[in-house]
Image (tube, rainbow, N blue to C red; front, top):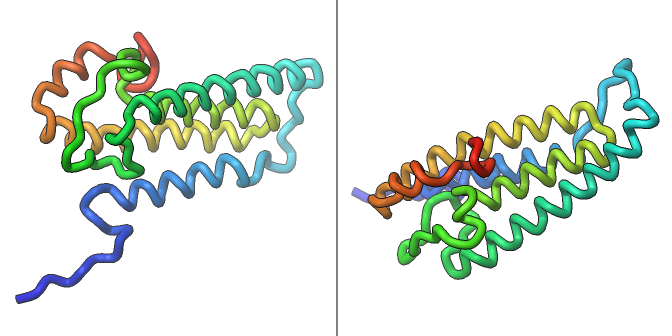
Length: 164
């Protein structure tokens, strides 16, 4: 009896999550920004929001890049850990368990503020929800691979330092 090979996106390492993540990020970047009839952002707030957005984008980019570099050879686009991975709990990972996701969320919110996109803020909230769900699945795999991961979960917040 031979097994039927599944398409790559239906794999067992979370490939479909990566496809959905790419779609949501594309929606944040290129999706409709607002709905006709919604009021524009107040002029005085627009300038401030653009500046705050730019700062959030820069902070999110710095956080994501630092976290990716800190992972080194453990970095994978898939939520399933590599076969010979080691658990990283230092650097950005001492503040949150998923700093790359945190950085991407910061960038999405920053982009929404920068472009004054009401709908883009909703997409960013959807991306946050997605990363919360994705990280739950990822953490089940991490617990299987690293039984002491549960201790790390109790010490370090998931996406927002000291809060969540």
